Image 1 (cartoon, rainbow over the protein chains, first blue to last red):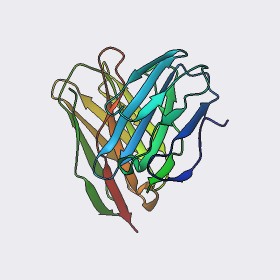
Image 2 (cartoon, each protein chain N blue to C red):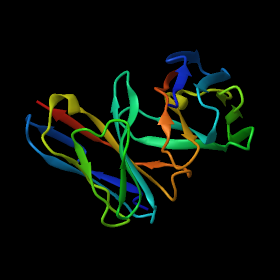
Image 3 (tube, rainbow over the protein chains, first blue to last red):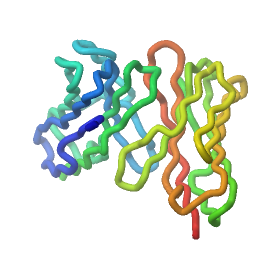
Image 4 (spheres, chains in turn yellow, purple):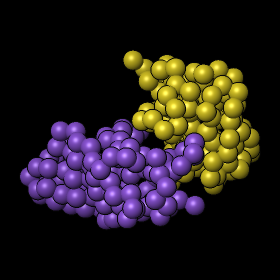
Length: 112
Length: 112
């Protein structure tokens, strides 16, 4: 089973560039979410989705955009990358928001 | 706003010791609490999920307890091994369909 797959694993961007972090799950989970993890800050929620066509903001949504057109995919878009967005990004999914969360391996992003 | 605190931030123990990791949360209106493990450079793996109606959950050498009224959970690891070295994170699901709120984790080192 593939579980939660994140691509790419590593990415370097220049300030102002845009990119999309991909997240796909093959478990037919309704709930998906994006977190960023920074030293000393822990995991912070960026955006989440309780089903296809439904998204909502988390704790730190500014500078990020999401959409959920299918159950399987939940891409995270950086509209204009800033050095403050240098972080490790994790995608997670679960059958419903109250169930065990399954995490991807993460994407390490550096913005220069 | 739910806040989750984990103490200590780091812990180093000799192999074979029994140890306790602590997690506290400010809002006792939770639906469940989850403990995760994170190895360096990897994603999170769910270890135990305790529903708000439960007092504890066990999996092998791990035992997690929950005292909702006092806003505390502990993760007990019996007979620690070097392979247990990792960061352990606690996450709380509050009432409604709000996503998990994570603590900053406890970094455990088990010395052979």
